[in-house]
Image 1 (cartoon, rainbow, N blue to C red):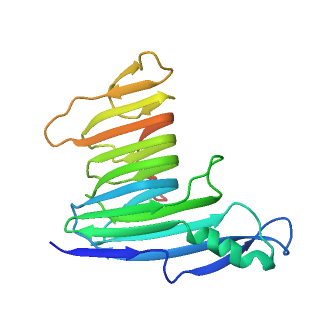
Image 2: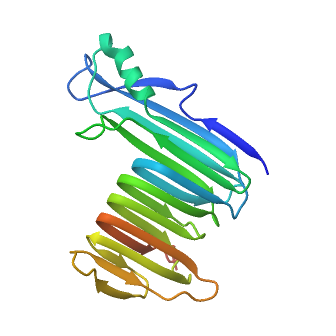
Length: 232
């Protein structure tokens, strides 16, 4: 069993993204991209993620992890070091144990929420299994064909899948809606203002276990643009 750990907050370049208020004050933004060798049918686990998480399938034998963290407030040049210290408190690490890669986010919690924005742009082999434990924000999975287990406290879950696939769906929103382009039985959630949808498991089906507290679940067909008809 192999083990690998990457601390994604190291070696970053801090970039000032100037706000509309002028050049005197600006948001601070940190971008980082890392690649981890990974097998085609492994599992990627997200722990404690927050913000916007996008996971796209690709046909490469590795996982690409791009993170973008930025301050919500604008800082003037004299406050640059203070802004850097604030963003350094948000740390994203990746640990690989054999066929499992765990991406963990650590950040300070305040009574009024967070004072940073965080985006993840992740590319994984197409048959990767995903397990996501997400705080507030959005989770988008596009074209990932392994089993999906996604839980979001507040925000939105969007899954895009091939039209001709077979899917065992178990989706639920406690306070929100569940919409699917694929067949399934829809019901209201007892005692709550949410919805749930299920489609029984069959052999060879991709399992979708999707849960959200406040927000919507969208299970959509991949939209493949039609080629234009040839000129005659």
